[in-house]
Length: 196
Image (cartoon, rainbow, N blue to C red; front, side, top):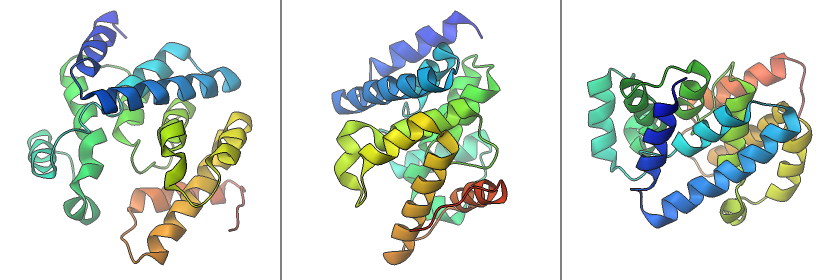
């Protein structure tokens, strides 16, 4: 992976609104802690964390337009909630700017919904994005306990997060992205368990 892509991402983060760039910094910090705990490649984790929300500022219409331009398949859940496309759009934009690391690409692409077969680097960034300190009030359950679980086992933390989130979406009559369901099912098929 060229050092040029690192500079492109750092420069891009510098152009983002302050709240978003601060969130990215918190995700990078937590993802780096997960990386250290699980002996993951620190630079790849850092790049994936920095890049995950590069297109989060875009409006839904713009994300849908970019998705169609890049040939990204758009699911009906994303048609109804286009902000879910910001990771896919960012990953494609980075690929066009020289990103050649499939693990980082996948981590950026799937950080909103998860996906079966995610690399541990992508799992670390997914969980860091959901569990960074400023999001702790968003969930009815303890993100601190889930962070502690993630420090020990990324798969167990991912299964718990997905199980709780899917249950919350269903309880509120909301759509559930099939990638989240497939990622959860994969973890269950591997023998992991979690009950609410």
